[in-house]
Image 1 (cartoon, rainbow, N blue to C red):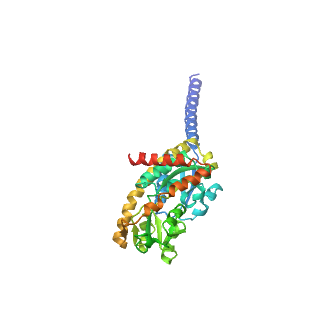
Image 2 (spheres, rainbow, N blue to C red; image 1 turned 90 degrees about the vertical axis):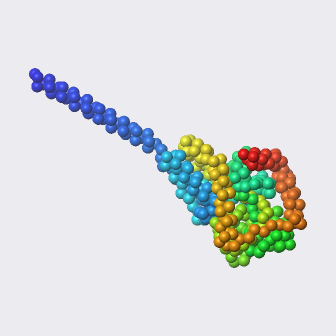
Image 3 (cartoon, one colour; image 1 turned 60 degrees about the vertical axis):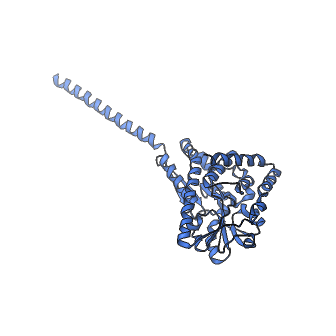
Length: 348
């Protein structure tokens, strides 16, 4: 009898142990399933310029932050230098899914972005940090019709652009007829000043300068080092012109398919990246100018007091406002908000 009882107790003990082990295994599997719900996500991100340019630095920082804040769930595969999409087909490529995200300059297509054309024109921006935050807020508050089928990821801008030329340009006479590479929004400005603007992407400028297709470049000054333009362009005219606005957009279907927590991370990064990019570029411009002067003999040329460039350009923005108003856009309201934001961010 005692032996039978012992067997019963032993069987009961073994059953309890097995039950506990099974429960433990079950809890591990459940935990594994719970964590496994977060499926890995890979997003492709395209840009037309090389990976050492300031927008590409922004891309890398953004990718790093997204991966970190999603605990590695989201990975970003980046394509620089037009290897996946170029400036000319960036929006179409993202719309059709060739890339999930694309970064490009809206300034290259001013007719597509009539309100941004207003804020790209000379407006008294002191630097890229202010310009970037102003452009970011304007795009959020006045979403361009051309971007209605995309998710806007972030936006930022360059410092005001400067003439970078093979020969010194210190007067309208020097500037007359000069073939200078520009982005689209600069066309009315440079035509009023008497230059011969040549539209092309920034990435094409180095070769065009070397081969003599253009006599200079007009853009923010970091490219003197990043694209080695200072090897050909030995002069910078100290007169601030337009800014170049950039926007990163995501395929709308891809955005809608993302988990809410991932969307939240991307939303949080929007304004952060605008501020980061502006601050980075301002510091990088100082570095690029120092390098260009020391390594390539760059000279900064000032305008004489007799030069009346301001007078020639004073109505340019008003003309853009009138043109946009004629299309039914709130251009005057946009212009007022532009100067409010410039004052707000400059005084911070």
